[in-house]
Length: 169
Image 1 (spheres, rainbow, N blue to C red):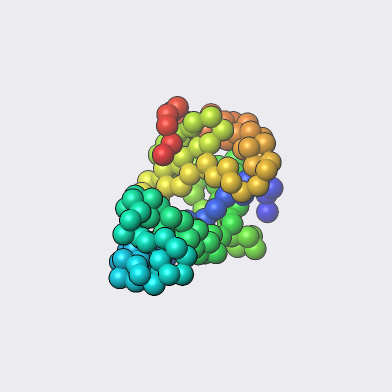
Image 2: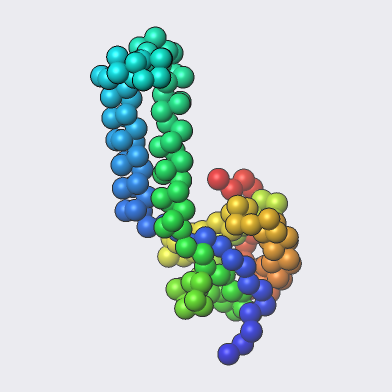
């Protein structure tokens, strides 16, 4: 088996059902908390000395959102999995952390790569796409992207793949 020209770690997409369930669950529980803050305002005032009805609604909503936002982030982070993008001469593969191949793409199935700084956005003919933009992996991920970019540019030139500069959202 040939060795890859370059490899880089990336976060694999989280399934839509999990993201949607976590988002809707957090939103429902957050709104329930806001309503309950007003239902039990007298008990809250006795416990902590602050009546939610006398506090600005914006401040109250922000304060009540903080724990739910953190909980949502922790749950989504739990379901996020790390994968590896391997770049070969004529194709690329996406594999999981145990090096089992998830998907293989020949170079001619890549429709476009958009670049912004050291990050890249891949688009394929089967409408699959992913970003190589996650800088939160660890402290040296930017250095990994810079080293990977050299091999990526050679791959693009060798296989005549369109690359454009632009903003990756």
